[in-house]
Length: 105
Image 1: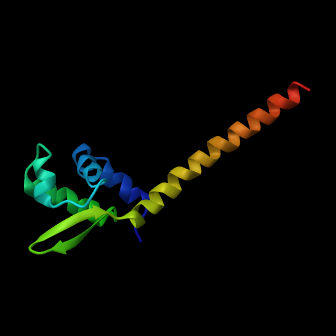
Image 2: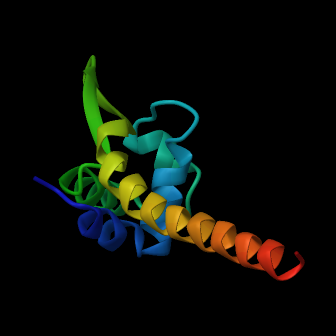
Image 3: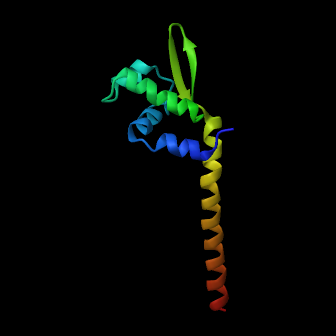
């Protein structure tokens, strides 16, 4: 099972993040991705391999090429991790608001 740490590690590289972000709108081939980035097709393929191993993208055959898309399941662990911090922030805000309300009474 992959975890959020795999996703963070994969997305730590700025070029890999750019590849991932370009998949946000629609599935794309290696060629389409390479045409929009200042890196070679082999480099894009390597970045996609890392993203795929981290569970963040998946590929589907379309004739003689593969189309890559974001794998929403791979984002679940990452989102759950980040959501825990958001919950902590909201709980802290609620506590501070209650304490302020009690002081004003």
